[in-house]
Length: 377
Picture 1 (cartoon, one colour):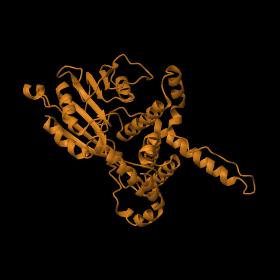
Picture 2: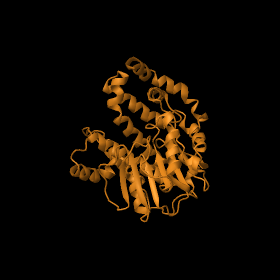
Picture 3: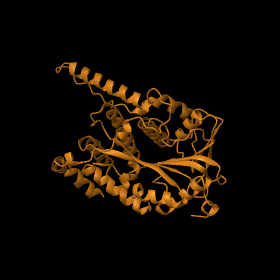
Picture 4: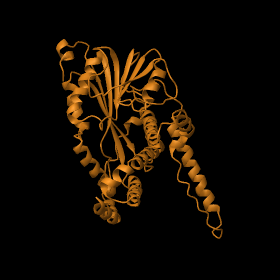
């Protein structure tokens, strides 16, 4: 894609000019989640760590700008290569201690751990808690695809009388805190789960659209239905596979991304197709909601502006983490890739881009036939 990428970058300014007049007609997203959600956890932490870090970073940037303005124009230029600090610095001490405790952890793992950590806190802040499902005193909680385990850890801490189990092909190798009611199991969620029928009260899953192929979704939902007790809930969170209101360079990234997803037989329309699968497997679809989060600080509402900054940092980290994958596949130089990433970050602000997270809450009926529970998908 080398020549194509170069042409896209060269024509970018003209395309931005042509598209600028269309921006007013773009959807700005759905932000009704700013109101307190009736299903949100009653626990309302003071202020999310990620949001606090974002505010601190914004203030520091303003102070740096003021200092630069106060410098005399005749003074020798001072080269300052310090970039805007990432929210990941909030976890800097934690990361250092983790690496010292686990010397086999590579830097790439830590970068992804950090990105997932920020994304978790962003979703927790916008959702005013870790769940929207109306759970009260679940005895057994399962997270499918636990990744770095932060959600499972917080749920085990919040629900001390519950047993929390995280399932993943690669369970977390490191984690602060060790609640006695939390454990992990090395499991491929696309295969039969290691628990008996009707033994779980709540199943949570998010961001698994890149790990579950199109024809595997019915099997995964079947396993969720099988292990749930009658009356138990599932809550699924899956992001749209592309950002809304993209600019021309971002469209180039997304086109490549979609092509890769097709090769992997992933469901590009999971946001629409999952409804039918949930119902087909016997669940009662209680609610489906769209959670839109700005990318960048273009929003005028202060809370959205803060979340938008955090989300942009997350997207920036993702693009940087994917550099080693994209550069050889695109056939472009590392410098060209960096330029493309810079353009995309600018486009997030200019075109008022946003991410959409789709949330499904479903319930296993109180009365289910034995055949529905035991028949394979």
